[in-house]
Image 1 (tube, rainbow, N blue to C red):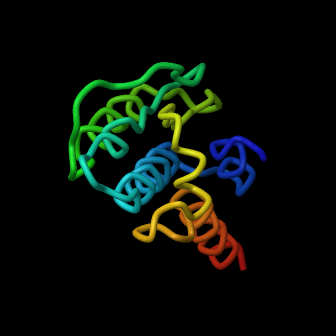
Image 2: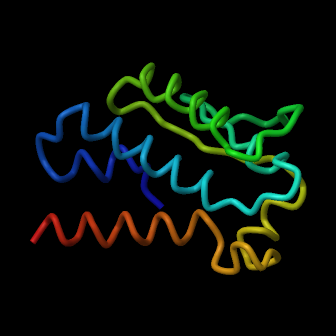
Length: 125
């Protein structure tokens, strides 16, 4: 899969504001769609630039606001063309993405990316 920034830039002269807003909006959708029990999973979404995060975040946040705020900081630091990563390194993240939770039976990532792709396709018509 192509880097999302690269895909957005293929649409032509896309302003940085649109790229940043798209990345932050996508991150927000993924975090908020994440199933929540204790808030540990939502709190472990980690945004980074250059390389993906490999560790885990301590603590919980049922709202996901901490993860989204941290992602906003990374998105604002992003230079156009630089890689942006959103990682969740908890051992059960893969299972949650593929229907392990009744709260998110269709996953978070795949659903959010498919919606974004549909909006981009519609905008490109």
